[in-house]
Amino acid sequence: MNITIRNEQPQDFDTITRLTEAAFKNEAHSSHTEHFIINDLRRCGQLTVSLVAVEHDNIIGHVALSPVRISSGATGWFGLGPISVCPDRQGQGVGSALMKAALAELQRLGSAGCVVLGDPRYYSRFGFTCHPGLTLPGVPQEYFQALAFAGDVPTGSVAYHPAFQATR
Figure 1 (spheres, rainbow, N blue to C red):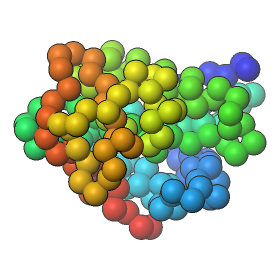
Figure 2 (cartoon, rainbow, N blue to C red):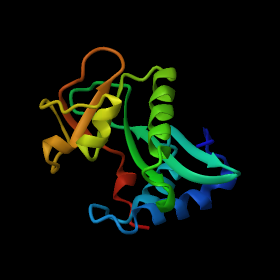
Figure 3 (cartoon, rainbow, N blue to C red):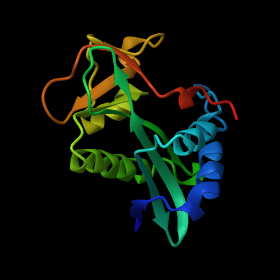
């Protein structure tokens, strides 16, 4: 696999939208609004990190990171997602490469940590673990995980940006 991970560029926006839509099209757990979420985060200036995986000048993956609010007042925390890989490239390490680059970028920016909603078997490979004192309302605890870069994982309720409610 010979891919390059880089920051998104304005000419990538439409490709990221199509890629994200295709990546989640057949996912039963999906709201099928992930591409709207990314576009709304970008429009609101809340897309802190947006990386693409490129192979032979083709974008084959994307990951988004945005700030989250924690009810305890802890700052410097970000939410990872959506993360998307072209359907014909899933299971080939593209998502892992994006994950590692995204977490490294958050650390470079000096963030305190990252939360993620998703399959614990997948995200635990990157150091994410469940923390009973940190919750996302309405979500089973085992699917909401955190990774601290500095200090301890805070306690409290996490809220994602309103863009995560985008439907178009």
